[in-house]
Image 1 (cartoon, rainbow, N blue to C red):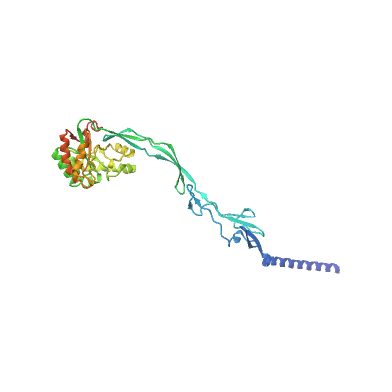
Image 2 (cartoon, rainbow, N blue to C red):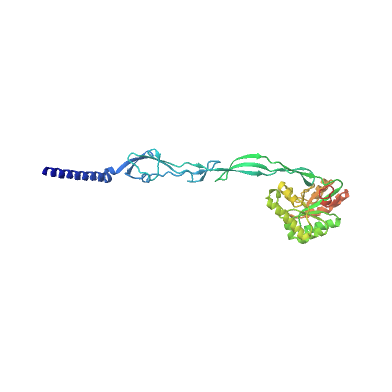
Length: 377
């Protein structure tokens, strides 16, 4: 019985001693030289603590960064750091920052991949080219034309055009310039007024010579000089539409062209009681859009056949006179200016132009009265 008790006490003492030894080894492992382990980070040996996370191991090392979003057209960076995320592996497998490292682990990091922006496609209408054929002054529609269709691939972020493809080509609108008719009738026209003093002087000459003319008026000028505009109408001359602000309608948006024409016709009707029947595009510049809009508003489009370029700063009265008389033929539509600047040379040349052309047998008529014009039929 005594021997058994002695063996029991010895067994308990051994167990206690073993427990102390295990605790001591564990404490030494956690607080002594065994508390640190070696980890390879991108080929470099790093001493880490047992149980450290990947984030702890990488704390003192340059961090990998996200990739960029780059342009599909030329590869330039569009958004820094908005591309693929950084890539990390632990023991050869994808890792997260919270994974725990063990002795001898290998951690690798690399920057995220650049991402090429997404692309999208859209279809755009191609403009209708305009061809003007012939040598007359009156424009009529010979061929309506048709818009083309273009497929465009664009970068969603950059807006760059990547590729284009013509799905359907445009067909040209063809405007035919027709002569104003046979006989020795001609039309005298004036642009860019009404202009204070100058238009009045032109009207005085026309009245003295008994000659009618067609005045293509700028809407803003009509509003600014209503009395002059009313005098033009009251003395039997015709009034045409020359846009409200003297704009190039071939370079203007459809909505602007519509307002330029309707605004001008509206102010002319309100102030003079005359409804314009003709439209002359400033500079003679016309395209399918402007021609179609003018027709929709009931306006015929007219250019000219005789242009002495009387607006030139170096022009003399004699040069203007000779240019007009030399170029005039039966059915001519003569372009002169009563506004837009100093027109003293035009005014000086006008009486001689009228008298010389009358002497050659020509008869001055309103544009509406030119034989063969769509408006005179």
